[in-house]
Length: 308
Image 1 (spheres, rainbow, N blue to C red):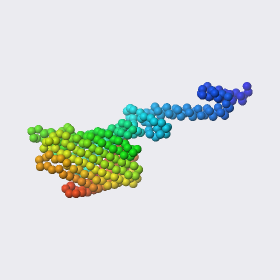
Image 2: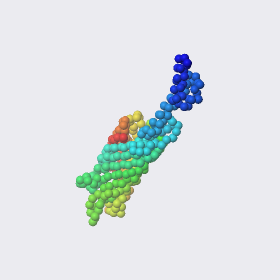
Image 3: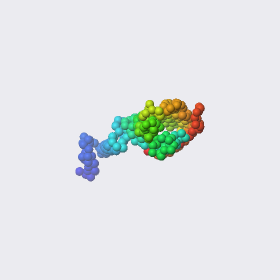
Image 4: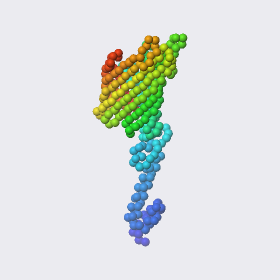
């Protein structure tokens, strides 16, 4: 056998040994063997990629599912995600002309393709929400709650019903013994609420409605209920700046204090501007005037925070 024949047969033999699928093509030409080997190499590379992505600790995203033309479930376990969403946590510092300084937090944990488990808390620091202006700050009103968050319209629309509890004395009047207030209350009140957010490339909107109801001593002489709602919608001038009108109402719907009456606490109408930066940083200022009679004047509020 001459040298040219050896050079022709040797690659074919190696290809046959490395891939049984080529055994039937032993008699093919050198060009066919080389072409088949190339195709086999590409197939192996594609399969290895699939295997790696299938067992990666990274979540399977909707984009990867569509790209491969097959369905897959997001992996379970700590740090996992559902529907391509990661668990998130938002911390905000809020200052309000009525509610005072009230830092808050909100967390979302993906449960399935469209739903998250949510939890939140608000640190109400206004002394008047406690047992009086002269308190020492150890009975400050504290709110905590849980709920669910539904991601609709490809994540543009988020609907979040939650149920919270308040602790302190604002709604229930505190712990009373012998007609005297002795201290704050655990489970002072209950707060069912609904938050709806919409956001796309051009517009954003938010609705909140919550009802603060006394849970302890509802038939006592110091129980209060409040309905609180707001609505705003804005235009995104850029990816960093948005602005729009803001409406807000707080109404005292139940008052068992001797001689007490239900009444509007405030009704506000104004506008907001928000600046959003990469990595979830944001700052929003809202301000305007009271509408109707009986309010306490103009209003303003500011929030800064970070989502991560």
